[in-house]
Picture 1 (cartoon, rainbow, N blue to C red):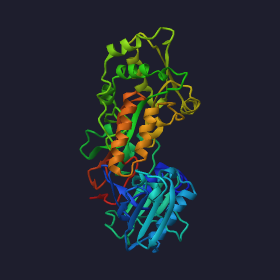
Picture 2: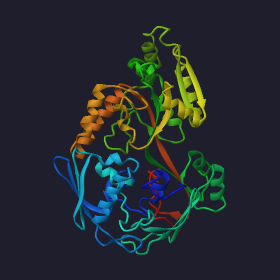
Picture 3: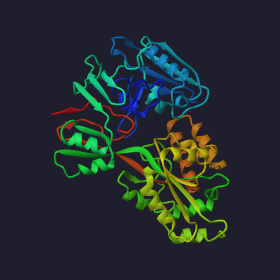
Picture 4: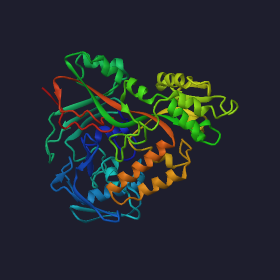
Length: 449
């Protein structure tokens, strides 16, 4: 539960997940397959050079305070996002102008193509607020905010003036619980009707109970064994990176992790644009890894540091054991507190670590030598630049796939699996989403019989 509902000024994935689609709507949205769909903008066209996008804004829409939503509110919201440098505002690209030639048309002009602009408009940057009101909880969605206790609970009421399909439930309360024990007890005793998202552990505890439904959905989050390719780090050598990928049984790890939705193999997940199955590039082969490590003298391979937070202790122990299948390098595993771990990563004092990357927020990291990976490959940088220069979605999908393949073939890291999300609900509850609920949780269809 967030401390503030103002996603414009307080970066909070929790606030965004609850506010989007429910209280405040976006110009575009995404479905359960993560495909961009119409929302407040019913149609859009992009010029052949990729520099001008024209959006047609839905008519007869009002905010919950009765004010009319039109193109002027869209322009003001986009300008505010840039002026206030809302988290991730760079995703809008190089804006030249945002205008509204009439009440139902918005024209966005760029100085350079931005093939992911539409997707940016489906998230927090596409949220439309009332230009006449200074209240982040006033939106055009199917719910209004009835009560908010920061860090504790949020109560939503049906917006009976909503232009679209009315919310199935009159009131929905979302409550934050301290841990799995507390939330599973609350569901068991009927205090709550649903856990979303539920941890893999909590979901497993309800698997055999006939009065509850456990759903497993896809996300765009991915778990990877990250390599530090800085000059002084062992993974700076291409052959060592590749040998590690042969040595690590990524497929086995993916099949054994309770939060796994499947093996990955590259920086793009199945729900993201440009996905290609790259899991076959480095099949598990201990002998191949041993041969590759054998090229190095003992002095060059004294050991490798695997630094993780407590969250990934068990997985790190598995990886350390797999690396130990060859004589060298020896693994020095360090499990640190979150505070100490963050310091080590920030200072670059690590060689291997396990991290989770959400959506495509880290996709360009492998084209940036100054990112945490310190990975520097001129070909990869060129491919990424070509992808970002694409003027249409088809070319972008093709170009970003080529970039992802090059990054994986050079073993910039080892992508282990895509994370799943879980929902546990009483069988009396229906109409809830099951995919991408770590990012957004549309509640308009949720009802209880």
